[in-house]
Length: 130
Image (cartoon, one colour):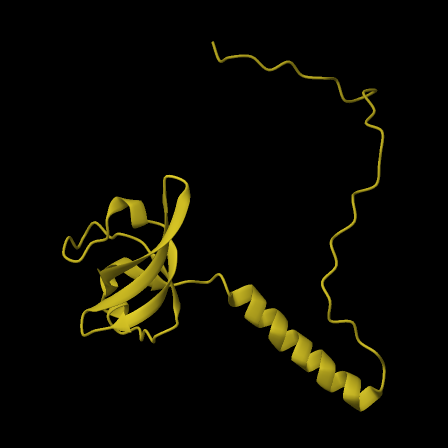
């Protein structure tokens, strides 16, 4: 697709390494497939990515050069950036109204306990298909 070549990659971008079988040139090794890393170098047809690789008991930062067909922008920071934007809006609203606004995240509480009745809900036995 032409859209893969029209994306801009800058140094510091977070990218996902994903080997595309349609293009064999500049393909990453299978151990880097699915890994997320940070761009450290941008050339005409490839990007350099720093990826963490586990070797025996250690995690080593490896620098790999991958063509842009095998790289895509990661969406791992999207939720974080959306939350930052929403918090900025809340802070501006707080300054105008004067009310305190909480920007912290809170874990969801456990679901309340309930009893499952078997009166009209007979238990089903599940077995292999004949």
